[in-house]
Length: 136
Image 1 (cartoon, helix red, strand yellow):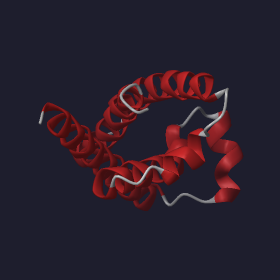
Image 2: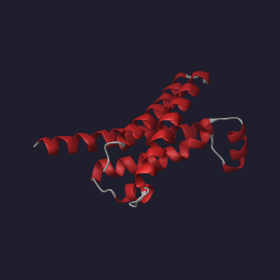
Image 3: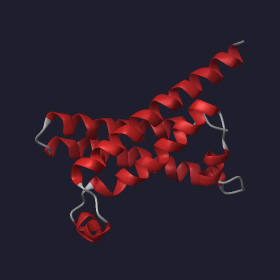
């Protein structure tokens, strides 16, 4: 019974992380009017706007796993080879660093709703990184 409880808690947590990351990414992409032509300027200005589409993909992966328990999308992103632990470690570090960066960037925004969405996006990246440690 304890195994089922931990599985449901893991899937429930993944669903909440995915929902937070996916919805905040959609809102932030809608408010900034992201375009590929502005990509170079975003990279040179150190704006975190580049990470919002990545949040869509990672949030969708967490939602799919949380709702259905299907790990195919997870294995497509992480792989199933000898180098998988290194990939997970790299994505873990990426998630922590980018999550803190996005949350810190939210201090420079003016509107409260944008600040909350940025903080939600940053927290969801950190929680995504932590949830990777519980995956097989």
